[in-house]
Image 1 (tube, rainbow, N blue to C red):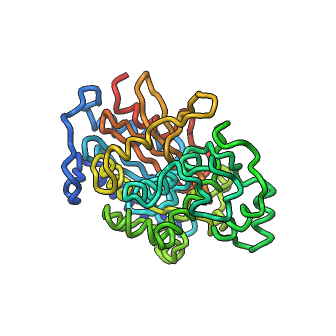
Image 2 (cartoon, one colour):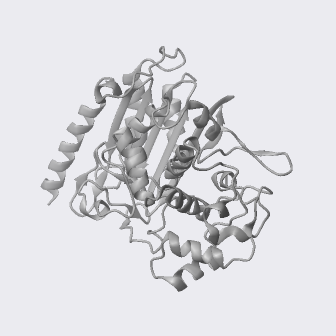
Length: 385
């Protein structure tokens, strides 16, 4: 058994080296030409930075642990991509850059993008009351708008005990339609829409219902036909989807602690979608990232609103757009999101002015550095200090 595992690890090392050599263009995958002049503030010694990336991940991942895949992008090119650790601890399958991960709350921006697609075609407006499309929540009033759901300022709480108990009273594995019924039984919101920022997964699951009611498609079908297929994201899908169990390239996720990891069991809330139900690869995320510089899905004027801070009733603002965290590094703005669900973790940082992004997908929820966020740590290796 040890000889077999050793052989498998040799294979993954060879694949990692193959992935990491040279600079690979996304244009070879028929991506649009959106390249900009080389940014002088980016470290041009890629081999040195690439080695630093390997060294960084070697600090907490080895040939017997779950791991991660990383991709670094600039100006439409792959500066580096690699994978570390195992996709399956039981049979010793090494992780590769082609493995599929759950991206958890990073998927919120894709739900928001679905709303933006419908807004640009005139099917809805951000400031419409959600009750116009989901009558089950009309009692929350005209200020309970689509925009408020997008920015987590709607007054909708997260999945607290009361909401979860009501969902489980309806079904062992509740769906979005069960959520709509549970919300219809709420007389009022815990707080007034617009008064405060409160991160709300049910709010994004409700946005998925809006997409379904407006488009006439299921949320997974809408995501597939209006986003993933259009962008050529051939290894990306939303739950529920049989590929989640059938595709051998879906990585197994693990929880626990270093030395005693356990495969993460399924979750009874896993049939809810919108707040985080997307599986994908770092390669497909690279395509998605590059197409955000184009007008393939929506115009740049529409997309720009996703990167604006939300305004509260008292005139203050919150650094969160439409499924994007609005952050700052060394007086430079960037947008990002992270996610954690079912033993998977993800982090995505994007510096639009630099045309530079880092995506890290992990099949573990323990023992990895995340302060500051892991994708930003990688980005810093490529920026001049």
